[in-house]
Length: 193
Ligand SMILES: O=P(O)(O)OC[C@H]1O[C@H](OP(=O)(O)OP(=O)(O)O)[C@H](O)[C@@H]1O
Ligand SMILES: O=c1[nH]c(=O)c2nc[nH]c2[nH]1
Image (cartoon, rainbow, N blue to C red):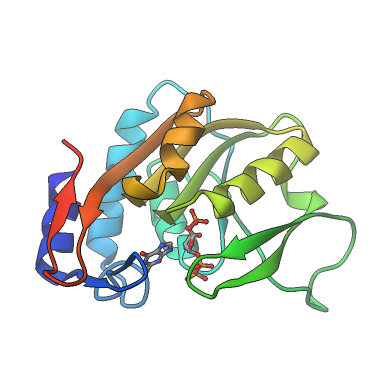
């Protein structure tokens, strides 16, 4: 998606440790019009698939998933929580995920009320790096007996390999910008053609 690539070139910065900082528009300050265009692009890609639910993971996926849902018939958006809470009651599907930016393991929890057998799920997230977050969400879907229909990602860091492994396994991964390489010394960013 050219618009997203241009924003990354204009406002993204490359940090050491394979971190791309895009918090001016994607995951701190949020450009809702851009999110809307991203939702439209996923709707076009996943056209013809029945999506009964959108599943994401807190925190950064939530806003993007909610705006994208407007392009999927207002499908309910469920976000997996990364901490137990007195607000989480009843039976839960749980797993653990290593967080790329926080560099520690988190529980990943969805109430059994909100993910069901028979659900056709679109997974949405802001970033795909090693694929840990998506693996966690896929595991929760399998536990629930839900079908993963596709995966919509804003920015994939292709050089970290998580996305290509999922594609090899047959998942339909639609990443709107795939960074093939980036350099924190020069600030250069190359996108997959
Ligand atoms: O493919 P992976 O290696 O799993 O990396 C991608 C994940 O990393 C980030 O989550 P993180 O927990 O770092 O930050 P967040 O709380 O801002 O979403 C991002 O939001 C993705 O969920
Ligand atoms: O803001 C972010 N930048 C990144 O490079 C990244 N990788 C995973 N999650 C990420 N979030």
